[in-house]
Length: 454
Image (cartoon, rainbow, N blue to C red; front, side):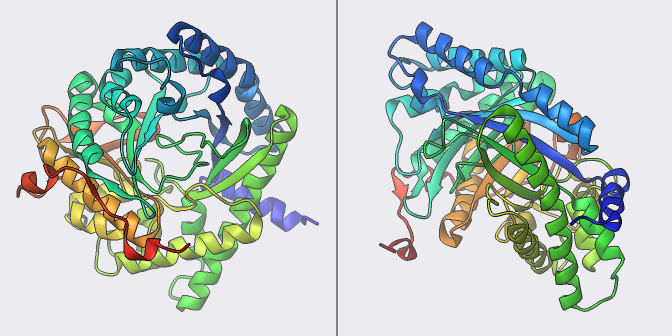
């Protein structure tokens, strides 16, 4: 039974501590749309998405009003487009037409983002995969709501360094084609290692081929709630600290479970997973970096930051899995720079560097996320940063990702405005030394020895 105290407590989390359901994401399989005729394929895709998701936004708004729980975004993820378009697309331009169809469908049903303009190339690229990857700059420049991701590595397969090298060039070209918007296109492009099939968060969401025809995945976020809870036990020992985080994560996950089950029932679509991720926003009081400061750091990036983040991530997962039998996606703590006011403050104070962020990604949910870098950064340097992050994911059997934004025309220390949930960021310096000879090698980095578990 839920008692009055718990009702009041949850209400306080929502009204004062920035608790929200960050997204209801409907995953939609497009495998039954496949054909070898491009026009027919685009018609099939548009019809499938608009029919399946016709009531998604309306249903989310109804639940939001009835339960008083803010549902910030309603989104869609689809089967990786490289798989769907492989038979019909003979060029990169053909794939761009699919991106435009996805964008038109997203606009029709009213979602803010649609993910799945993606390729899975952890062991090598098909011709269709390469066409799609090369089409990404044009696709993101010509669409508004489409998000793209490429999985270039996994613990089982190793890292496809040919794809890593190509993506350094693709990221720079995406930046150039969207330079009038401070290279915003790069904010909609993620490079993954060990990408999950059921992630509801953008820009990395796609609907995996192991999934049902359609599912409802929900992402919940509450860094402000965790920060407030820890303020109540300031100065306590580590056991008390861990117990507080676990209990708070449990309560936050239960809110997501309620919304997910209700959305599933009303839409007649199976419930997939709850992704309990401490995903920050630029709003004051909604920061993962502030949690680290509450744990005892002057700034995120100070000595002890990696240990504090490891503790936070682990306790969030432990609390979440007790609250729902279907916790999935990424589930943990996100550390994007531009979307977290505390992280921005840490960069400005000189406490947080790209290298320290890389170290912290060893223990968090994702990786180097929403980081603005100088627009004159070389493609090979970007590829080298990607390779480093993919290696962390591969060896540690976890998801890692890179979302770098080389801002054309801007240099270190300048400010970049992205707007909305994407926030703003100072341009961070990158290591100036070359990795050209390393990145130019052909082939793939093999899987680590501990990948052989069969």
